[in-house]
Length: 232
Length: 403
Image (tube, rainbow over the protein chains, first blue to last red):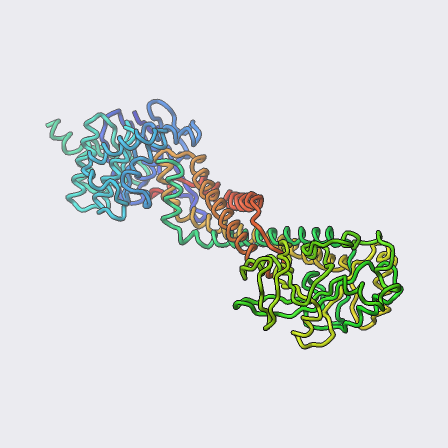
């Protein structure tokens, strides 16, 4: 379970104090699929960074499976990340000089898997996202949709329980966006928790819950389309 | 995926950016290795000269410069052969042997060699005018010529600088001459239209003597058409007498000649060696500043350029230690490559330029590889440490566009 308890984050920028998060509270149970929406600068990505243990809050606590993330040092948080969290980014963030299969192998290397285990697992994941025939291509030799699929395969490398997605469809055409959202829904159906920051209302609707952020605070929460249908 | 794969892939992806730093370190190490290599063999040559020649004295034309003992007679200017007679007839104590020389360049089979005329000792002894008052009537045992008395082996010329007998049609050839011309003992050799018989091939000395053809002084004087002149007189002097002022006495006797001891020449060579050593130190300092600054600058730029990639690795679970290792391994590879490349290039340069710059034959010194790699790696690691530490402390938030 992911939990935010009265989390706030303030920055100093050009002599002024900027509030990115302002007493945010959220509970995301295991297996949930949550969309975080809101205008630019509302604190969506800050929230995601905090859930991923990459940005310490100015106040409050962030808990992952009852462990307060920011009571751990940065190396311990990195260890927790590679064991439990899968990231997917708007700009894919593939390592440009590595092939698709090598990109997927990176998280496996980070947890200490040997070369043949890395190879087998990466091949399996790339096959799952339909890129068996592009395994040795570099990111620049792949279409944006294919790049995002490599990123999705990388995200699943260490079988994470939590998926954090930052605008995963932001750079994609509607058809590919649909495929990515379908994929996230699929991994959610496997029991993984998915938290997705998005500007795309159609993508947001695919989640079970939609959290709206405004000026650093969660101002509303509503069920997604499928949850509403299920309730109806 | 391994750490080295991650690092090597990045290096080859952005190799053009790395090139400047690599060249800075490569050239610096090349210069250090070549200077060290040449000065080592140069110092060795000086030591060998001192060891084999003892306290020899050279009588040269006034205008000659002191650079290389073995090439002292190859500077073109001459002194009268009569000086030899004056020395031999003098009552100076401590003159154990005299070896006048006249040298001229000759071209054989398209290659240039030095034809050097020498006067065999038998001729001194044969000259009645020198008997009694001459140097050979003195008791033996003072200087380096003792070993020459009665020696029939012409190859001793290579070391002792004096030969017992040499006929008009005989030549002795240096090791390099024999190799380049493909001649051996008893072969015939045509020099400037005169046919000589090769009496002996001299052993390798590592000096310009290896490129000489030795013939009788008077034959060379005839071939050069310069008359009764010589370029130098090598004097094997008695050590004690030299220390008692033999040089000054010869100077007094021959005021129009320059008289120097091998010690002075060795001193000049030692000064050159010291200069080369200082030069090498200067290059070391330059490479530390220029090479170090270049590497540090490149690494800082590399960290800045890769901050998103580093952030991604951190988001995927890389800790700061791993990020530090990524950059330090890259520096290590750069250092090892620069060190090995610099050693190889520096050694090639030293082997090629050593004989031309310092007049010594230079051989590769494997021990310098350790020095080269050591300096190069230490420099690359130190220069990269702070940029690497900055990378390790990067905020992984850089991965995200919006914060």
